[in-house]
Image 1 (cartoon, one colour):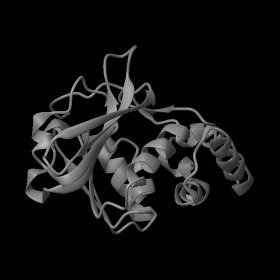
Image 2 (cartoon, helix red, strand yellow):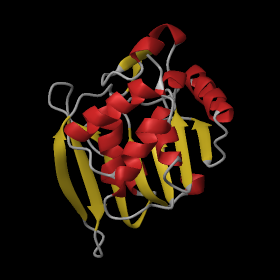
Image 3 (cartoon, rainbow, N blue to C red):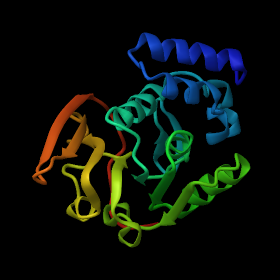
Amino acid sequence: MTSQRARDRLVALLREEGIRDARVLEVMRTLPRHVFIDEALAPRAYENTALPIGFGQTISQPWVVARMTEALLEFGTPAKVLEIGTGSGYQAAVLARLLPNVYSVERIDELLRQARRRFRALKFENIRTRHDDGMLGWPAEAPFDAIILTAAGEVVPPELLAQLAPGGMVLGPFGPADQQHLLRFRRDAAGTLQQENLGAVSFVPLLAGTR
């Protein structure tokens, strides 16, 4: 169930479900998702479903990871991206296969330790991580060309907007638990945020603090 055939079946499904970017599909085909979950769940790694990773968190459905990555790349390749919510590390790893520099902040220390071990095992050298309150971003490394959130808030935290480069993008789920939508905000030449709704999604909530 972790074979290349299983990955190929997943990519075929993603293509059927509307993912078009060949670069994204190739990463989804070659990156071993089973490495990012508990060994007991490995047989389900290439199902198109979210899976638990402990601490009340999940690894996102592959379609959602692919769609968010595709949306991030639609207008060009950001050189420097900040991810809020490292989780299992899977979304950061997908981004790191496609982008020069990925910065990722995780509030749960043990999840971050596990993700770091996975990044080392897969020999990623362009992912930097930090244990901190994700709502605060990573001010010392700002500005970022894009900021991606992997947990749902009501609004974009102002601290994150302050770390967005001119012409940058914020992408993530927003809204209450039963009405979340994937929103993309792009900062225009005048500095105004232009909002696009990319469809309904379901994510764990964006929480403040660390643990």
